[in-house]
Amino acid sequence: MTTMTRFRQREPETAIRRNRIGRWIRGCAGLAAFATLSAAPTTSDGFAIPLPGTVFQFPRDHGAHPEFRLEWWYVTGHLLDAQQRRVGFQATFFRQVTRDRATQVHLAHMALVDPVNRRFYHQERLNRDGWDAQADTQTLSVRNGPWSLRMVEGTQEEMELAGGVRSELRFLLRLVPRKPLVVFGEQGVSRKGEDPAAASHYLTFSRLAVSGTLAIGEEPVREVTGEAWMDHEISSSQLSANQVGWDWVSLQLRDEPRELMLYLLRRADGSADPASTLQWVSPEGRAERRTFVWEVLSTWRSPDTGAVYPARIRLTTEDPKTGLKRAFTLEPLLPNQELTGGLAGIAYWEGACRVLDSDGRDVGSAYMELTGYAAPLKL
Image (tube, rainbow, N blue to C red; front, side, top):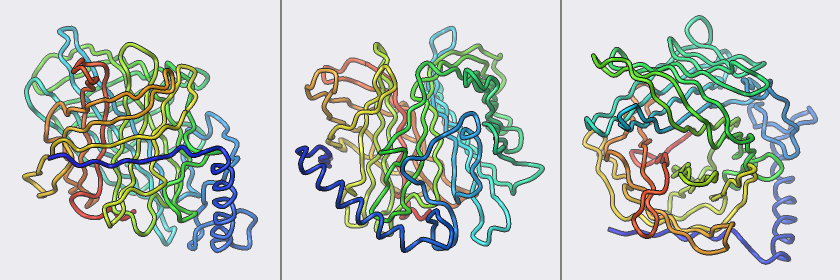
């Protein structure tokens, strides 16, 4: 089975200027509809909207932003032990304000895929703000039960991640940025749809050196090293009304310090929303947009939810370094990397993938997130 989505982003320069003016006028009109008596526009229920030109201050902006409804800190990566056994891991900390503004709710997901033993481990935690869960507003320090992600060296932006899955595994990892922080989007705003509120501040460390320890079951604790990707998104609405979900990829090339990020926003009619984007990250940490083609080469059906997810993907885009087309095939380390959403009620696929070039050579690592397949996603 092969399905293909072509998505074009680049336009002639005059058209770009004309369309930017049109978007700016439409955006201003839309924001006015959300405006309250305060100077800054908000959603209809009073939550902040990401504004162009926001000046970020660190380490404060690595922390929580309670004026926004929704926020997450998200780390994925690939690890190797001394025997070169490979695992993939995910750690996500969500913070959301209830609509009555009475409290904040903290949801966290942990997952690890062990392809050697063909095991996928995952767990969720859900707690109200307070004793069991918290997010600092002055620096990166989030926790949910025994899980935590914190900045241990503010000037170098080094982090420590402590996580696990029940009594089945545990890990303690040190994350050290290898490249500058990337701010995706235009003027600090990553658009997610036509709705002016459908946007985020999207901050990313696209390549982190990882070292630490991992223990699975009764096995001895092993030393591990690898690389990771970290997203911090700050938002009050991630979707427009006609969208049902998204496909997201973070891809790290092995032999050169470049990465790419893609999100394909899917509409209810099966089309791709124009806000969908692919961006390369240069060695200097500069984001560069390019067109892309997304081809579903095969699918996988979940035995738990019945959802049919894309499995093998061919991603074709222009390499900004050479100007030539470049194709990557994403192959999951295991087919079943679905988080079934017992606490949050949202099932999605989040998985570690190998990256093959057009000649079939293994050239990198990726993580892929597929949402809205078990049921339309509503945030």
